[in-house]
Image (cartoon, rainbow, N blue to C red):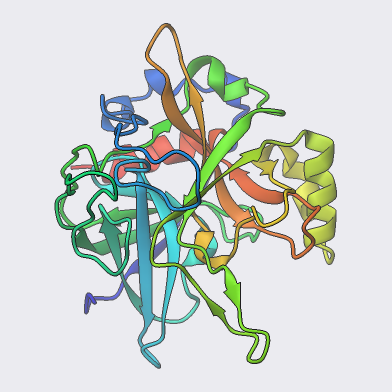
Length: 307
């Protein structure tokens, strides 16, 4: 693990209605949506829960180790540029810690992933030290963050960014759309010890995006002690409510991805939500932070921090 402390920055943020902000006109536009963004490698396994190599090339791991007791934890993150990953703000521990980002990994037990049906292998996974962690505001429901790594990612078929929304997608209503999610979730519970164990392989599932009324219901169930989030209802998007297809703690920070085509371009996967909160009630949809709501902050941060 890296030995340096990570700087936690809380930056001022001005929320802009999505339709009023045009990311493609921003000075940092050239830093995101690389030509390889949102494109899936064709080495895909259809069906099942295990993700194939190259199927989610934007999926990364944000691993933290607390200085006090050396305990480690992990969040799923999403690559959005060659220096930044997107994740949930609550992935950052409150206590002093060190952290790294791991990219190009599907099976945590392997340094280099190989296809189960082919002899194709991905390059070895790479670990990057973290330079800074950014968060727009110290409010629990503004659960989105950016991590800047030291060095730069090299994109290939197995490591590539997910696209960020622009144009007509910023105000699109995704209710009823099937979205994809991938993360290294804990999924087995020991009935005796009540402890969980997670898979070594990246897990995937497809979930329906819910409408605003369902999302508000989820927030009322999950967040019972405050209603302060209601003034920022557009900052959430909800998906799920299917048995055994919901997010858990290790999924936090992973992105809800939707395949879309903009202005005649080929279909690409766009990050529409960041996994933030989940309910223990199977019929209640999971809550994701709406990426488009924070696009101006994301663009400003990346542009200001990219040399």
